[in-house]
Image 1 (cartoon, rainbow, N blue to C red):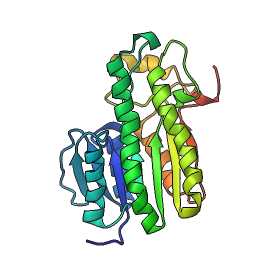
Image 2 (cartoon, rainbow, N blue to C red):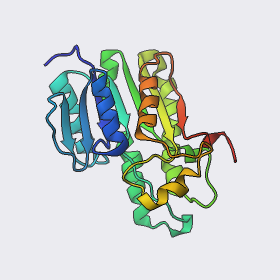
Image 3 (cartoon, one colour):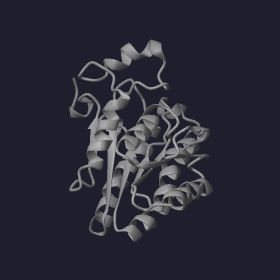
Image 4 (spheres, one colour):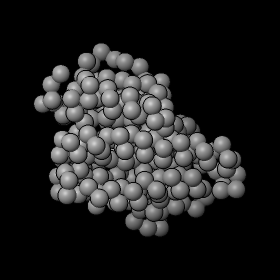
Length: 237
């Protein structure tokens, strides 16, 4: 075990944005502990996978324990795991509500609460949430009440934790994407979704990854929520 190499934990890491984040941190030379419900191991010995539901406390404990046990430290936590359920507010079921809270909020809470003491012991660390630009700029005709409720909570706690830990070496930031081209969107919906952004195109995984890497390498930035949304947050168009 070496404590010299930096280490990142990435949740929701099996595909889309999460898989892109894992690749990007490996490009920076980090070892990575990658989590999602059904993630499988690969050939890279510096990427350790932990399958399981990050909304469960025991899984979050296992993820952090694996990082510290295998690599001796945790430098960055990327809270990427999340779900989006788009419905009219009155159409949400209790099951929808509980599922959104479980993944978007409990998943963040458990792993972040467990990892912060390790970062405090090290004297440094960086926590990044993936939220959504819909928190500050809803779109008429695209109801997203549960996303606003849960991801809006992550945006608020990002600022709160940034202040709470600013003088103890831990930075806390967030990235708020617009609509990103990932497997969750049907191919026949992409053209219509692209028109929701002022720039007239969908975001790409690389756009979100670039924002995260900026925050990673910006040591004087904390409490920032960086919109990656083709201008959507700026106003109506």
